[in-house]
Amino acid sequence: MRVNAGELKGRRLISPKGDYIRPTNDKVKEAMFSMLIPFMEGDFVAVDLFTGSGNLGIEAISRGAKTVFFSDDSRESLALARQNIKLCGVEDRAVLLAGDFRANIKRINQPVDIYLLDPPYADGCILPALEAINEKGNLKEGGVVVCEHAYRDALPEEACGFVTIKSRKYGAIGVTIYQRKAKTDA
Image (spheres, rainbow, N blue to C red):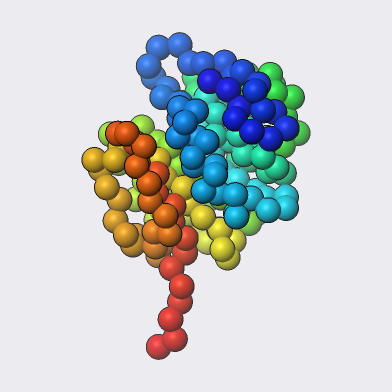
């Protein structure tokens, strides 16, 4: 597991031992961040909502994020993410949040450009996370929510005030990008 691009390109990250954390593989991560290029302009803020190893959030920092919130309810995951953040020397751009993803979304009191969602596939957390993000209302206009999921578990075209703007398949993995649904004049 390594950083694919940006200032930390090539940096090896500490991989999880065992299978309690499933990091995004490098091929899918590269494709995901290639789709995100238009949304990573300037000093953007990202949230790695189900952080695991910190792989996605560190990639966002490497590609220019001024701040990344790393959220997880697992102590083991946050400890591994903390190790990888320290290994990369980016502690000044990382904020770690322990606890349930819904509570952590509520704790983020600044505008967010990109939410990165890669929860355990079987947990069914994506739609509840979209609902919590919509309720919090801190996703900037034009911001996106990126969801990694099992491709067989297709996500809806519209959900919780969001609409799909891109959807791709990489083997058994699906990546769906949502943006806030445009308000129509009634």
